[in-house]
Image 1 (cartoon, rainbow, N blue to C red):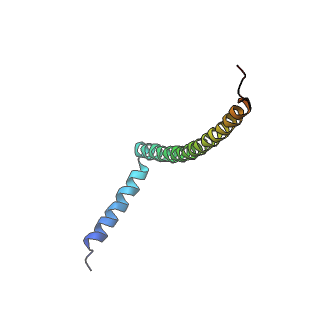
Image 2: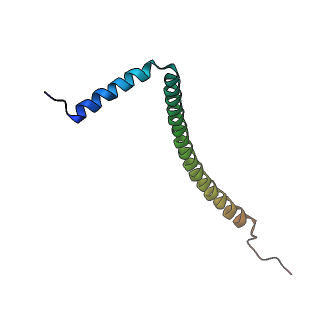
Length: 87
């Protein structure tokens, strides 16, 4: 029975992976690539967290502006004299 091209490629790929895993230099490269992937994943999680914090800060800033605006109106109304000054 003859092997199909896909079967031959699969077995060849398995051979290459087997030999590569025995190479210490390649093992270091693979380890470094794995560490880099993990670090990028961690960094992306942190960035997503920062985006959520920025959104919350923007919402809080809007609430503070509303409160400050209400205080200014109340202060201005309290400062206005009820009767005009006499000449």
